[in-house]
Each structure stands twice: as C-alpha cells, then as structure tokens.
Length: 542
Image 1 (cartoon, helix red, strand yellow):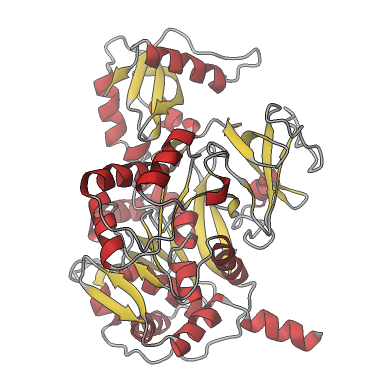
Image 2: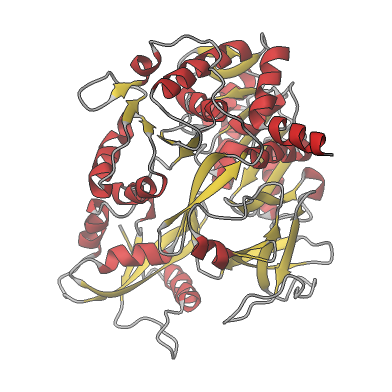
C-alpha cells in the first residue's frame, strides 16, 4: 500500500494529465484565439508554455512562489496557468475589474514574485503597488512593448526555447497550484488555495456531468479568474480532457454564435444574462447551432419561462450549476430536469453532499439539523465537497474557522429544498447582491459611501433587474443637505477603494434607516422597502 500511495500522490496530478494529452493528442487542436487568428496544437501549446516555464525558473522562482495574473481571457492566461503546474509555482488570477485599493489587498496577501497583466490594467496595478508598498520582482505586460517599468511578455520569454523545463523538486497532489480570491463581507479578499488534486477532480466533475471528452470544443464566455470560468469547461478541465478551447476575451453574442458555427463548438458556458443575449441574437440571425451539445449557466437560477425559451431557441440541452469559489459547483440542473425544476439550483453533484440546515442567530447548526424537505421551510445551504475544496483559506485561520465546520462549508445562502433534494436559493444571510454574475457585498459598498463627508449614514441592497439579476441600490442619510445622487455617484467613480461595477445605480435619500433593537442594520427589511420604492418610481437613477 505504501508504494500505491507514493505513486498516486506523485503522479495523479493535473500536469500529468495535460502531458498525457501532449503525447497522445500532440497534433490535435488545443486552443483557438479567433481575435488573434491563431491556433495551437497540443504540442505547440506545450512549447509556448515551456518558454514561460523556463523564464520563470531563470527568474529564480521556486516551489510555492506566486505568479499573479490580471488580464482578460487570453493565450497568456493559459500559458501562465499551465506553467504554474509545470514549475510547481502558484498561479493567482485576480479580477481585472478590481480597483487599485482592492488589488492592493491581493498583493499583500499573495506577495507574488511575478505579476502579469494587460495594458488596460496597468494603471490599476501601478497604483495598487504604491498602496500595498509591495512590488513583485518582475512586472510583465501582455500587449505592450517593454519600458522602464515593465517587460513585455514577448521579451520576457524570448531568450528561452520550448524545451521541457528541468526537474526542480518533488511534487504531489496536495501541492497548491492555483489561488483564487473571494471577498468576505467586509470586502477583504480571502485566498482559496486549490491543490492539484482539487483541479483534477474538478475536471472529472465536469467530464462526468456534461459529459465532456477529448472530442469536444468548449468556450467559456465568463472571466477565467472566476472558479466557474476556470473550471467549468475553461482551461482546467478542457486541457485535462484533451479537448479544444476557443478563447472569448470579452463576451459578444454575435461573435459567440459565429464562433459556435465556425469552430463547431459543443459547449458554451455563461451566466444567465449571456443566455438571454444569445437567444435575442439567435432569433434575429438564426445561426446553425447543430454542433452544440449544451449551454451551461451558473450564478443564478433559470426561471421557467426563460428556460423554455432557451431550450426552444438555442438548444434543448440547458444546464445550470450552483456552488462557491471554495467548492466549485455542487448542485446541478440537467436538461432532463427541465423545465419542471426550472427556478431551482438542482440537486447535489455526484461527489458532493449539499444540505439545507436550520439557522440560529448565535451558532452554526449541526450538519444533521436539516430543515423539512417540503419546499417551504427555509434554512442555510451547507456543502461537503472533499474532492473540490481545499477546506481552508490561505494564512487565514479565523475565516477558515468561521466558514468551515465538521467537513462542511456554511455558505450563508438561504434556501428551501423538496423531497427530491432540489434546492431553491432565496438569498443570502449576509445579503450579498449578485449583479451580472458578480458577487457584491453591501457592507463594502456602505464603507466607501460612508467615507464621503456629506454622508451621515447609509445602507445598500439590491433590487431585481431583468437583465443584470440585481442592481445595487443605496439609501442615504445626508450629513449635508446639498448632497445629490450625481455628486455621490461621481464620488464612487473616483474612489480607488471600490470597483466600478459595484457602485450603486439607484439612490434614495431618507431620514432614517431600518435598525433592530441591538443597533444592527436590517438588510432584509431594506430590500423589501427598495422593491416597493422601485415599483413606485421613488428611486433616483444615475
């Protein structure tokens, strides 16, 4: 048994899977970049990755060092992702939508040796470095020439050939390969350290549930810095399966459907708003989507009427997944569950245990304290996902203890479930807002609003929107009567502490906010008020 354990732990890694595909599918297409007009076979992808590997090793990076990425979906993202597995370093993709203040937290947490980014992110990166007072030893820009501050990606890898990097150290399935970031309720990011075995088993999960194999061609239209972008038919499972990946740098419905027809794409992945745009475009143009095996969506439930439309207009095979950054997806709604179960989050994935447990104010429920499976009693969603979760945050034992309990992650989502264990997500205990597939925490937005000298107090919630899902809405108690919604909107735009997509689009000025007897803000009550105010036209649009 010792020999089996040794072989299993050293060789059942993601990079072993990728290299198997390089050997057996070397001449097959691995990646297509339509915008650049370039295609890579598995052999060519491996060679371009090796150039980066050898550059990183020449730069002195060793096992466990972090390479941070801030860029849209592109070839350089893929090279960096694979190279981290090969060099036993850690790739850490971060949102290109972050403000400089937010990025500074990530820099302080991960302390990357190398930072790779595109020209649109350059100003944010430079400002974040000043705020964090930490500078990676090498700054690499993907789409601009070298200068005094940065090295172009082309120049960084130019001195090195595509030969396999040298052996540097032992490696096993428990080594960290990827570090993603998820924001806490205060907006301070938490690092999620994924191991090689997490990435292998996340790949297997996709391959089982689609199913997906080496014959498939995938395109994930969501940003790859998300867990769902990277692991749901993104670079991780696609290259582990030996399939082909089509790059979509920025979502465009017409281009998505054109690519689907041109490259015979079998799986498209996107948030529900993506499906709505695709359905509109398909009704206008009527592309040949005969190659599609399915469209997979994540982030929010599919309503019954929308689901029926997508099945009719796009493909009968519509899938919906639900999960977290820490655990990937953990419930899955498949075509044969629709449209009867549309609006639900589906039921547990094969290797996962998802439950709805009672909610207590001062403690966590025990994992076996489940609510009734009657579709009415509300509880908190908890997830046991031993295959796909690291069960910890990077250097953050306090948050680890707060989030995990007895092998389950306590999500903060509230839901009901039925006799067949299909979940219906109702919202969040912490009142998170989901807008266009992005998670926005009211307390972070409130903190920035309260830094405005003319604001006495505020609360933030979300109101329903047919396209974005929810729109960030702020209720303001003025400290200066001259304050206007336009002035406050400009204040938020100018703040380095909040990403633009998180700023409120609706405002209302009020004399008081809903608090409970102990002085805590009652966000769920504000949500009720905001929905009524939206219906009655009382919200100010900016």
